[in-house]
Image 1: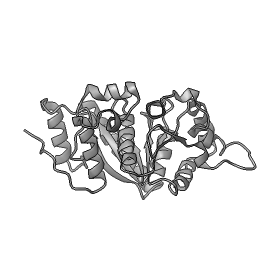
Image 2 (image 1 turned 135 degrees about the vertical axis):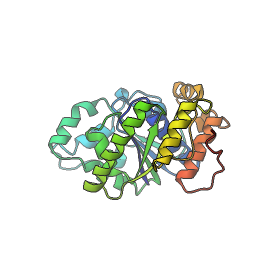
Image 3 (image 1 turned 180 degrees about the vertical axis):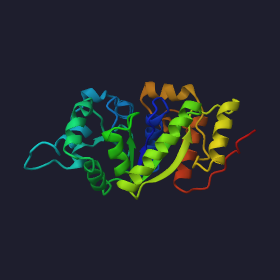
Image 4 (image 1 turned 90 degrees about the vertical axis):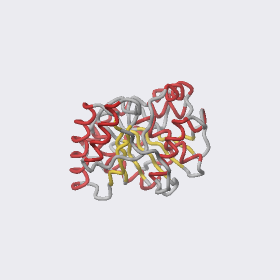
Length: 265
């Protein structure tokens, strides 16, 4: 399964959701790969404990060979790095993605990521793709390469307006480039159950028929602590409430039965 986590708005938790779902997948025994397409490299730093700028053999190197004349291109798996966590691997980001983007776009290489991830899918059970907060060449490549799309939503009115634009953009990409892509759901992130506005917004999205997932991820300082110590929650705080919410989200995405509290008034 190839799953992209995407939102054009920044600060909605794309990297946190990507890495923590992937870590749960790996902890369950599945060979799992995180592909970091954001030049900021937050997922790379989180899972490999090194800034993307210090790494060689990155996703930028893999894509760069598609525009450079070479007799033999290296295989996608040669750019994959093992993380310190069992079964969890990373195709790391690089600051060079910014400089490479124009070349790839000019050469019409938007399908190359899909080709590479299909090959990697022969070696990995699950692939999670982290994206930058922009609808650029790389996020379009990711949406074309993926089979499922998760959209983080941080429960404010600006995010709600952006959400409609995102769904329209995805619909266009589905029709023109990737009929296989399914919007798997909208994830309410940094949710505050005692505040009235988040509950109101989520309820209204559900009433509009949008695919809001039943698991809501709470706002918690534990997530920031997890970033600081470079450990996904399943390893740093396995019994924490937010960890359980991520586990419930993973179960829902995999069709498992989960007992959840209803959205209170």
